[in-house]
Image (cartoon, rainbow, N blue to C red):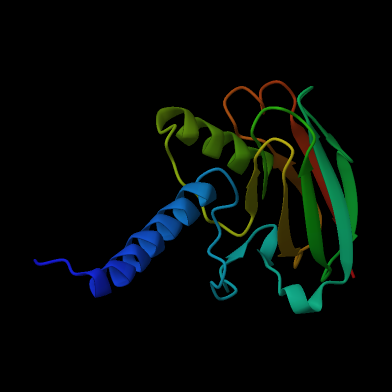
Length: 169
């Protein structure tokens, strides 16, 4: 291919576009893996389903700390509530907030130990880099007691778990 002076700007733009695309995908590797424009999932779980950000009924800030604790660690909501969790990582280690039953969290934690490179983009979990903040929107459709935890190696076992109580309508 013969490169002329007039083709250099196009070549530079192509290289720049490729570099920006690569840096965006690398940046996403440390943060929330949820696709920015993915449709809201209709998949249901024992603890609810992905919530519509346009129908949030309450916002709850959750802080994660390197002492392997959440603040607050005990959350109360009502059946039907769509909660916007604003999750802040106040520590220096990567932390996450994963919703589920205690048994589901334990099983997922074991699977992560066997496959440490697992990637996630499920709507009931968010990964937050040190000093970062992510948002997760969840609709609690069934009453009961559910959990949230950090499944980074050793964190759940060290007590990084919280409780969500969903009161019946």
